[in-house]
Each structure stands twice: as C-alpha cells, then as structure tokens.
Length: 456
Image (tube, rainbow, N blue to C red; front, side, top):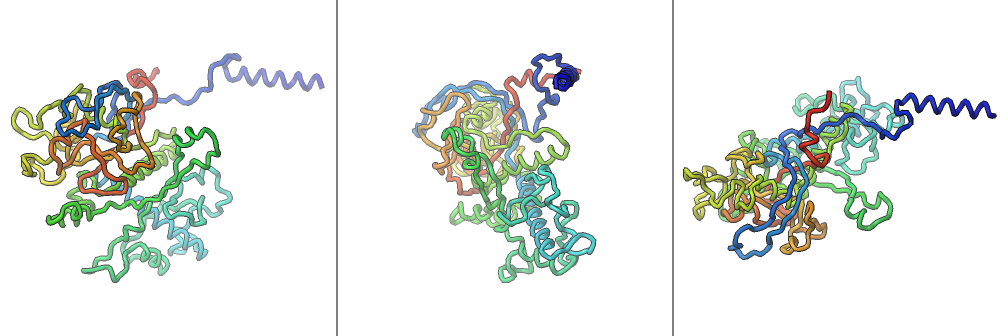
C-alpha cells in the first residue's frame, strides 16, 4: 500500500513538473487574444463628458439637464444599418425557415439524400442521438418556427434553395414552398410574393438584470424567449403622412437595389433588438467554425453612449460638427433634415440619403444628426437624468414601452438634430423616419494598451 501511495505521489509530481510551472501560481493560460475591430464599426474610446443641454432649453422640455457621466469604450457602426444589411437578416430567416420545413417533411416521409427529391434537403445528421452536444448547439439550427419536436437536428446548408417553380424536384418540395407564399386569391398581376408574416425570428437570452436584482432563484427562471416578425413595415411611408403621395417609397424603398445603401426604416425597437441578436449569432457561428473565441454580443447603444459618440469628442457642441449652425461656411447644409420651414430639398435630399452621405464626425460616424432617428436601448423618462448612474448610465425599464430615439431625421427641424435632444416612440411602433445602428462592447479597460502590437 505504501509503495502504491508513493507511486501516485511521484506521478503527480511529474505531472506538475511537466506543465513547466514549477509548482508556482502562474494562472490558467489561454490563447493569446488581441482585439479585432468588427466589420463596418469604429472604436469609440471611453471617457467622461457633460451629458445634456449645453445651452438654454428653448423648447422648454426640461428633460436633459447637464450631468457629468463616464462611459466605457465600445465599437459603433459607422453608419445606420442599411436596407441591404437588414435584407441579409430577412433572407437568412427566410432561407432557414424553408430549410427547416423541407427537412421536417423529408424526415416525416422517410426521404433521404440520393433520391433527387425533397430528401436532398433532409437533416444532415442520420442519427441525432449520435450527435455531440457541440453539434447540437443552437448555432447549427434554426428555432424561428417555435417548438417543432426536431430541436437538435442539423440543417443541411450545403444545397441552394430552389426558387424557380419550374425546377422544383418533386411535389413534396412544391408543397413546402407553397406554404411560404401568400394565398393565390391575394396575388395580382401574376405576382405571388413571400408571405412576410411567416418570417419570424425566435431567440432566447438571459435577463441578467432581473437575475441579479432577485439575488437567487433558478437560472432557467431568468431565461427569456422572444419571437419577432422581422419584415419591416413598408406601409409606414403612407401611414405616417396623411394626404401625401408616397406610394413609390412604399413599393420600392426596402427591397429595390437602388435603395440598398440607404438606412432601413419601418422597424420597431423589438425588431432592432432581434437584428442585434441575429448578428451576434451569425458572427459567432463563423467564430465557432474557425474554432475561435466568441465575440461580445451586438446590441443597441445606451442613451449616454449614443450622445457621447454623436459628440465626436467635442465638448458642449450643439451638433456632431460642433455648432451652433446647421450650415457650413459655404452655406451648405451639414445634414439631412427639414430646413427652411419645409423646403425638404434644400439640403439636397427629399427623403433619406445614403447612410454614408455628408461628412462624418471626429469618430468617423456618419449621420449622427439627421437622415433617420435612431433607436437606443434606453426607456424614455423625462426625469431619468436625475437618478441614473454616472458610470455607463442606462435607464431601461422593461415595463416602460416608451423607448428613446436620438439624432433627428429627414422630416425633423434642426432642434431634434442636436446631440442632446431627446425624443421617444413606443417600442412596437415603426416609422418611416426611425432606423438604428448597433454597438459592441470593447474587451478590456484601456484600449490604448490592448491595441498595442503583440509581442513576437
């Protein structure tokens, strides 16, 4: 017995020595990590600033008193999310919905690859019980249809979806595709389009704020599920303006390539949040395929973050370019808004403009004033500046459906373009003048240190 114990001790000692730590507390070493600037984003270095109205509040709203706050570093989209970027989200949801329906029907029929029909789109796994937990992870699958009984099955994404009706491989494939389109009696002029009500994105998240404040309970009690219809409301171009002809914008603005680089509108606060969740999932699916660490989640900016970024490092300016005027020294307007009491074209734009139009501010952020107002994560309370924290302040009450919008839009007067002006809309409302951009937390504390070149 003594020999056995001595043998175990020697093995343990050799094992420790093999790690090269000589028994010292050196920490659990991971892979070398260096920050990667997200595509299309710019780094906004954190700091302190005076938030709120820096001049007299001529509108007498009294909802933005001055307050010194500090925000941490974060990345922000250089432009508002564009139509073509949001269409990538819509098309992903559409394709994932179709693939899931095809795979389910193929499974129910017992069809498998090799027969040339719907079986080619069957689930990639032959036996789900033999899949590893890693393979069953949510990024391999799509849950937008809700509970189907096929959770954990791997979709086949190797084949392109066949959209041409003349090339459908069999009647079962046609049956599935038929469910994705509006009924024949609702079609006109020979055009039968996708039923956008079928495009739902379902995601789950952990409500950390709730979990922390309740200080206990089971983790699953704080996991929330949201199901969101994600197609923009194109009718906003008509509903927002009574006795006005805007049908061309309703018909073409979101889907036509002519408007691909224009900011998406007609999205609710809930849809903007769903986009953030999808973008995180989509990026991390790639990270996982490359065996890289996951990135921080994309999200809507807090109100203090948005104002800090809009100021571009300029203290006490009225606008992102400083101010106090909306024209430059040559008499040209510096943003897309409603100038001269309604001469919409005076700023060279009738409605919206490309997301990278006009000059960016000193953080290289475009259209932080004008073009479209932008959803932020904060709830609107006229008195929120009085009680919010001074470090990374964000007041987001889930029972308050009024959500802050910032920056003013193409149909607003100059007052709403000021970096300190606050406005709001209800979270389930969509407007022709509200869009959004996303942010991502910077990993670390001091970006100047973390962004140094790694040692060789």
